[in-house]
Amino acid sequence: MSAVMSIRDLVVRFRTPRGVLEAVRGVTLDIPEGASVGIVGESGSGKTVLSRAAMGLLSGSNVDRSGSVTFDGAELVGLPRDHVRQHFGTGIAMIFQDPMTALNPVRRVGVQVAEGLRIRLGMSRKDAAARTSELLAMVGIPDPAAAMRKFPYQLSGGMRQRVMIAIAIACKPKLLFADEPTTALDVTVQAQILELLAGLRANLGMAMVLVTHDLGVVANNTDFVAVMYAGEIVEQAPTTELFANMKMPYTEALLKSIPTVEARPAGRLPVIEGRLPDPTDRPAGCGFAPRCSYAQARCREDHPPLVDAGNGHLYRCWFPLAAPARRS
Ligand SMILES: Nc1ncnc2c1ncn2[C@@H]1O[C@H](COP(=O)(O)OP(=O)(O)OP(=O)(O)O)[C@@H](O)[C@H]1O
Ligand SMILES: [Mg+2]
Image (tube, rainbow, N blue to C red; front, top):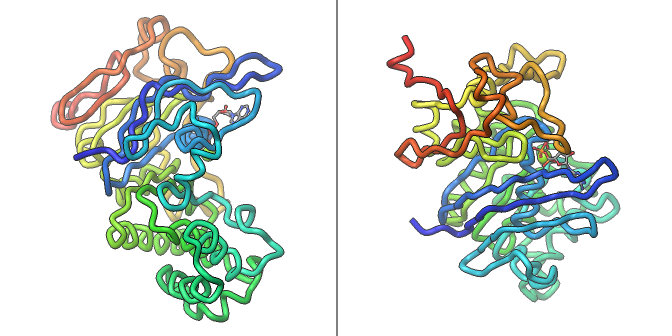
């Protein structure tokens, strides 16, 4: 299976008044053509910075990026920003966590969807309007003609997210980054949006990177998973392999923190005890050691390397969890 995107040793550093903050620390990851890859981790683990850096969307004089990201065989790191931009829409597209901030509040929905078609595909106003209507129907918006005339605030959260998806898929990208596409939505709507994305992915043959803090979402919607902790991938495997043969205590802790419908009445997500290490002052050993119930002296001293367990399963732990059969 060839990769539509290959990320190699990607490092992202922010120079901040408090010192250098290494938000992504040597990530290597392939996104196979047409596959769905989940990136999962707690808030602050570096999921968004990784996604944005991979797409060339991070800029600013305080950002340093090194390593390699190839898309469709072309290197993106080091390319001038407008060259990277040529890939957007037609090659790579992105949907964001909060569609209210990503959509322009004072422009009608139809205009915002049609814009990409006119700019990127050079469509006439009339053709773009017709295609916009088709796209809105494709993403399950009941009355596209009426929706096109509305402003974003006149739509529900789920409908706005559908509009964002319509914009993202308008130019048939090969790769879609979806950064927490359903976090702001209630559970029922979340399921509908994930189902919509799965259907579109199959129809368009596009690959997807699904960023989430919820391993439950990963289990049902991805072929491969990368678990991030403090800027690193700490476990990575085909999804079925990960759940059958989990190695990292951190991944297990994430699994235990999956919210259930009954357990979130106050809207608060269960969290793992303790905090992520200070990103400007990382501990010497494993970053999870202070919070890990299995940690031993070595974990606090030596940084664990990535170990290959076979079956495409990699992990970073001195004392991995035993296979379920051996644990009991
Ligand atoms: N522009 C920036 N300047 C400085 N630090 C940043 C910047 N953007 C992100 N960071 C830091 O990088 C780290 C990773 O942040 P990131 O947004 O990627 O986390 P995340 O995994 O996406 O979290 P969440 O689940 O909350 O979205 C955090 O410590 C964050 O404070
Ligand atoms: Mg994020």
